[in-house]
Every structure is written in C-alpha cells, then in structure tokens.
Figure 1 (cartoon, rainbow, N blue to C red):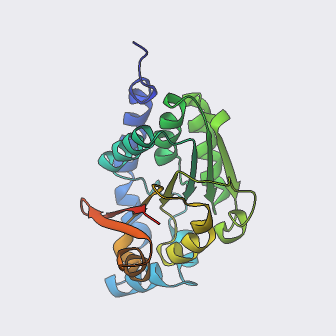
Figure 2: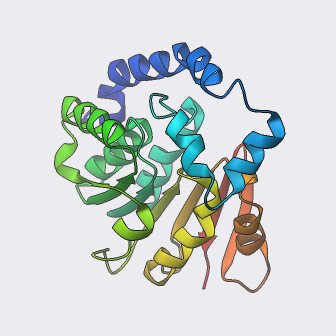
Amino acid sequence: MTTPTITSLAPLLDRLFDEAEAASGATQAAVADLSDADRTRMMRSKTDYRDLYGRLKEAPLAVSRETGTLLYMLARSSGARTIVEFGTSFGISTLHLAAGLRDNGGGRLITSEFEPSKAARARENLSAAGLIDLVEIREGDALKTLQADLPDTIDLVLLDGAKALYPEMLDLLEDHLGPGAIIVADNADDSPDYLARVRRPGRGYMSIPFAEDVELSVRIS
C-alpha cells in the first residue's frame, strides 16, 4: 500500500507547527499596543486590516493541527482536483491541501498571498515537500489575483486571509462552485456578514461551525 503523502510530510509539518507555536509570543507582542476592541475593528474592517496584517507579516498565522487534518480529509474524501485558497501565509494549510491533491492523483491548487516574504516562505516549504508542481502562488491583493484565470469548476475553497473580505472572496468564486463544492472558512466569527450569507436558508449553502474557529459549508444548489 502506498504511504499517504500527508504521512510522509509529518516531520516537516511537525516542525512548522512547532515553529508557529514558538512564534506565538512574538505575534502577540506585534499587536500588544492594540486594545481588544481595536483588534476586532481592524480584523473586520475592509480597509484597516492592511495595517493589522502588516504588523503580522512575520507571523505564521497557521491553521490548527486539527484544521490541517480536516483540510486533507476533505480534499481526499471529495476527490478534489481543483482547490483555491485565500491566504497562504507560510503554506502550512497549503501543504495539507496539496497533499490531498497528490493522493487524489494530481490537480491544481491556486493560492493567494498579499505579503511577498510569506509567499517566498511558502514556496520553500512546498518545494521541500515535493508539492510545488501542484501549486500556483499568486502574490498581491486577492481581489485582483483571484479575479481571473480560475478553473471552470472549483471543488474546495479555503478562506484564511483578511476576514472582512470573505464575502468578496465568495463573490469572486461562487460561479465556479457547483453542487457539492466545499468551503472552509477559518476564524469565520470575525466575518459576520459571511456567516449570515452561508447560513441563510435559500442562499444555496448548508453550513455549520466546526470546532471553535472554522465554518464548514457545502454548496447545495
């Protein structure tokens, strides 16, 4: 039996998760001068998020280990061949998604990252994992980089960038989502407009919260 790609990546992923956990103190220090109210406002603002993420440009901002495992499982169980990710950071989530594609027999993963230094780190990690051939990293504002040249059909979406832009991201991608397409939105509580949209009856989705910080949605019509 062939060893699943995600299993062979365990040493690399363990190191990256450990590094992300070790960086949590520096991440907190980068926003220590902001009140909780200011952080929430900046997170949910469609303009001020740039300042917030500028402060965090050295932070891994990784998904949890559980969410990473969920992403791989969803990619595999759905037989995904086309995936779009909003918010690459250092590529930890991207590695899980690309591993799913590899074990599905291949495919295309398009991911967008605003910060060039993070995109470079993600490329290094994906190259180390032998998965870079499956991944296209688009640098810059995702409202522009994900505006064109997308697959006709997208099987799986991960939203993990600026939370205020989740509704706009869905606008860009929605026409490419057929019935059964899966959307995972990390830290979705910071995007109440997005939650209202995917949870509202008659809008074409079934959606439930997963764990403490993830919204899992499926396109049903």
